[in-house]
Image 1 (cartoon, rainbow, N blue to C red):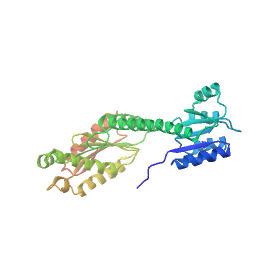
Image 2: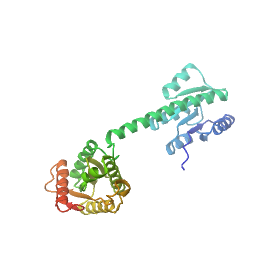
Image 3: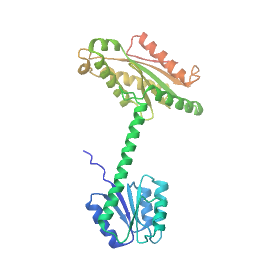
Length: 306
């Protein structure tokens, strides 16, 4: 089982005694700590690794705290910075905050004050994380079909427009597969709509496991699915369609539907370039025409528009 990621802190200070005290405090508090006495090494660490919080001295030989804040602000703005310095004039405080510091601690200080400042910083960081997670969930909900967790039609159409324009511009193959479940009404009639929904979720899972990350799959409506395969010619799209068809046929659905253990799907394919495809909607229409042919020819088969 994966352990939760520890909060990461980068500590930069050229005073050895203070550095050691801070290392002890932060390590005992359970943080994942990286420490250095040099500002240039601090920037290299920021280039190479991800940190939640940077605690840096303001005045150091070579690269100073202001340069570190500037780098963090421009390259890793999600990382908070706390400045520690002996120069505690109002002007210094204002300038540090303008440079991007989240908080400001003056020397000499008590470790409890440092701990309180770090706790406040991580309260802010955790709120940021929650906001990012909530935003990500909302974005997924906006583009996802609730039942199957595949893309919804609206988002699929956006992907189709983008991929068709790219395929047309660079003369690259683009394939579309339309698919639906054979005799799906019988499943709903004999096993109920809830069981029918489970069947759709299982088939959606088979589709998801069969495609590449660069491909797009959506629930097109009812028991119909649509796949978009960039840089995929007719031969390779046919091989994928056959693989999905066989995976569905081989799956034992009796745990969902009871007596209806064997279910099948029919699929239709259209690949661009094709003389009949003038715009992206033509790709879907012709793939759907091929699907209709597959149904008419006996189902549980793949048909290709030439």
